[in-house]
Length: 110
Image 1 (cartoon, rainbow, N blue to C red):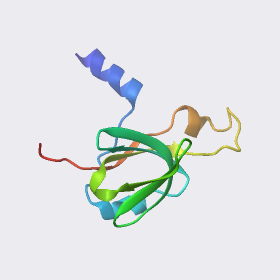
Image 2: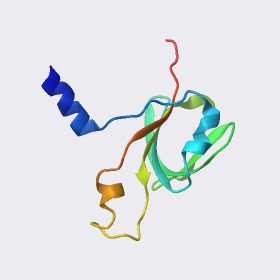
Image 3: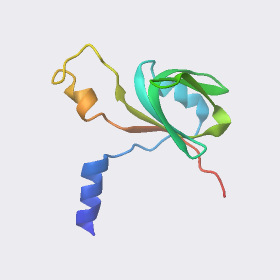
Image 4: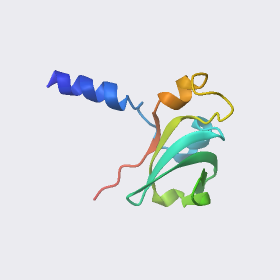
């Protein structure tokens, strides 16, 4: 049992406890950071652009800009910083093993 837990921690990383308040989202994220957003059962990954009281906007490779309404967002996970000008080894701390951080999560009653 403990081996399985340790394997999970090593493989998946640790997510930090998240604030539930949406107003904390802009303070936790900066433009250019890689994020993963879970909304309506879908996962979208991209580069964070901005967020306001009603939506969050990310840049994706296949859709350009994607605007997701606040009411649809279930979880936002920060996945590191995009730094395309650095080489493979120079960017190892961000690109190879980005530090995941849970920025926002909603628990809905089903």
